[in-house]
Length: 241
Image 1: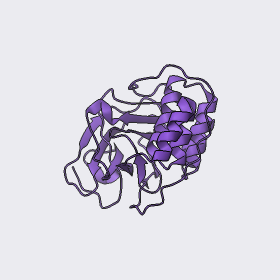
Image 2 (image 1 turned 180 degrees about the horizontal axis):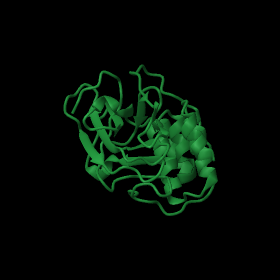
Image 3 (image 1 turned 90 degrees about the horizontal axis):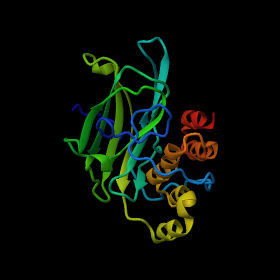
């Protein structure tokens, strides 16, 4: 594995472990039963504690097919929190590509990845993801992990790689979050996580519901609104189409 001199995040995943919210994307992990169409609008409140910078990459580059495309992670521009030791992580590729995909998860100051996999190229564009539970991977509490997605344009010239990543940390839920989740139910869980600054679980909560009901415009609008709050306008626009 090559070292990166940036504060990027790393995620790894194996074939068939995708948790996708997009029709025609790679094989989904587990789909929920179709849920009610209503959802409380998430309003993300970033954590106040000091943390290392987060999101990296997200550039658009020309592909061999003479088309440009974007690779972006659904991560904030600061360290994002989860209250589960096996979170789901999501990213966005604007269209299908023949480039191979590498996903990695690594402790911030470690050399050996916690998880590193090469997975099939996506057959369509959109939001895709992986749940670490499907790989037996567990995060340590209060440790920053980098996770990133890499598209390998040329295995012989890795300088052409297209990369995007973020940082995630597993923390204890606040008493307020526990109370809100108890009262919120499925329709309000994404909003409860967002209000308490738990980014990754907010995204996962709404993305799981989209996977169960991919044609539900209200769910997509809710995720799009959440993404806009951290500057991920392109992905938000994709959801709002």
